[in-house]
Length: 542
Image (cartoon, rainbow, N blue to C red; front, side, top):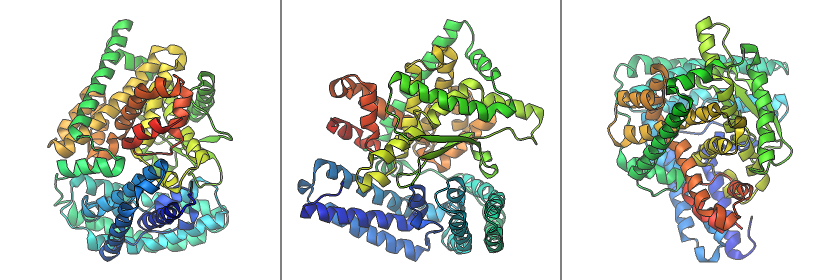
């Protein structure tokens, strides 16, 4: 909450200045929070512009460091740490990670009309205008990328940039069809040629000039990786300890899976086989997911696991065509500044163009047990419920805008284990098999992240890890390994889950009288804080 004394008022003003400054280079982040004054903006990523931004960041960090912490409340001192990380995180990307010099995805990945398609936050003409302004800005953005990028680039970065760029035309098709609902398709259609010509030129340059000379050199290195843990999560824990904790969790999950297999008198592979055979037919995938939304909501209430703020509104829809290549299921939750509480739970359907074998394989991946576990993660008590608390609790501006991926994904992953502990699925062992299956994948992501970026791991070594320890087939294992090259932060699932389990073990009984609901409500009251601050936040909780 804003403060009233002089020192507090000065800090309030500094907090506002820092948040506004961050949104200059991250307007899409502001839109995702529900701040629609930033609609249609693409940042100026010219080197001169970001250098000016970085210089102002240094000045704001200096003002923050000069703030007399003794005159702030304990809560506002924590907010000061959030503000520091809010500034240092993008500054790391510009100065230390060199994302805008070495990764073409920094440019093509920023072209998205999704926020204006999925949520009815404003009349259609307003949202269509935001799409048009986004498209108008694309040529400048990609020209800045051409001027700033310095190859040779890591090969996975080039290949994924080509894939992302190649999917933009279908994305624009959907935007044009959306605009037609208000008879405004001409606005999107008129803005597309220049945007698509710029995208085509950018992709031709990547494919013809940069792909042939791309390299396998993608690693951050130990020093930058350690720094990444701090600027994203406020963690000073050595990455070797992070790796050790991940390996221990992998071993724990493997041991439990082996125990279930022995109890059932079958091999682990047979457990998975039993699970995947029980799947809905293609037309029943979305209706089944809808039933699981209501089932998991009732389960959370019946077990008194965590408060469910009202009102709630979740609709289950097929993943849009342009998003299906990269997603099995996802949750689009309302931001803390959005006017409504509606959330969209996307589930990717069978593609009618697939062969019967491919369709069956996809349906097996969405078997009923796995789909229930996914719903726990995405909706109740996972992402959607988490974001409802974020909206409801309000709090300081810093806490309403800071997002730790390790807290967000860690909470959703933690709730999968929580649901098993509470007996979801009637205590059937296959429910736990599904939960462990996903836990093994997340453990391997953490280990691959550390290995690829600090240990000299090759993509082949990471691929073998996913095959042997997460039981993935070769193709998905390769994709998981490749993801680790450009997204080292996919450590977030296991890292966040372990942080939550740590504070639960330490504080559940002494601070919360053993009540899971009180513990979870206190945890979610703080927004999405960096996991390095969880002990301090929960120790202070009443």
